Amino acid sequence: MESVHRTVLLNETINGLNLSRRSVVLDCTFGGGGHSVEICRKYPGSEIIAIDQDQNAWEKARDKFKDIDCKISFWNQNFRNLDKVLMSEGIEKVDGVILDLGLSSDQLENSGRGFSFMKDEPLLMTMKENPLPEDLTARDIINTWSEKSLADVIYGYGEERFARKIAKEIVRSRKKQKVMTSFDLVRIIERSVPAGYRRGRLHFATKTFQAMRIAVNDELRTLQSGLEKGFEVLKKNGRMSVISFHSLEDRIAKKFFREKDKEGSAKLINKKVITASREEFKNNPRARSAKLRILEKII
Image 1 (cartoon, rainbow, N blue to C red):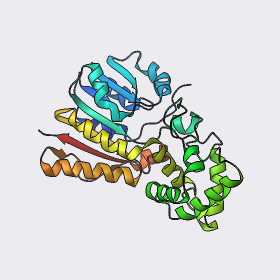
Image 2: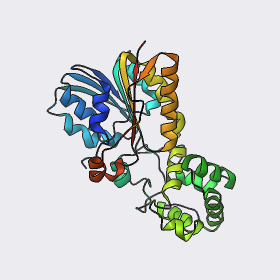
Image 3: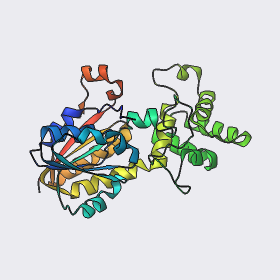
Image 4: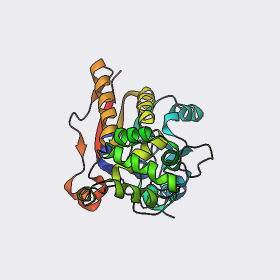
């Protein structure tokens, strides 16, 4: 199945990297391959090191690179291991690093792993295409963690104001029957929140599902590690583009960038966050919450 993902802030991200022909770029979140393809088109002869936890991402996108003057290697890895990937490639430094932290449309629509509250699928929420028995899943969290831990995760990672009520209802429900699918969890959340909240602009399950996904994939610690390692492998005058989709991620990126700017090892390319244009939002509603920050290494 071909990728259906539409890359957000594509031109802004790539133009902000200030690349040239034969650049070496680390695409830490390959997804549908949108950024990598565009770099290859704009800067012939470039080399892309692409990383994604989902092997299926490459299978869907590989045909896009057939007739392009570009060298690309794909690594089925978590980007927190980007240093090991580059070591295996024999590459010490790169010209650009991309971190697009959004969940791809392919994972939402076609993964079958329960990322979307709009589809009834096994409640896994892991980025891995084929999780091992020992890998943490949302099903594990929902069915085994204490009420307090559930409330802390839903509030801390989802910023959900009804976290305690949702956690209490999860524990009550799982005593009767295990919570196995995404719709099982949606029904629990629906019973936990007020009617007015259920009718709000944002779907009432959005924040809880976000929290579960972040917890399963350890996304915030992974992001911190990826920022540190990504900055380390940048050449002098190399740039890093980070696209975030919720406030917790953006806060981490903003803090990291400002610290590097303050210590004098880097400079902020955009002091004001870059967001999607009205036209892009109209064509791709998922662009609404995207925020782009760009940093240049100067020493």
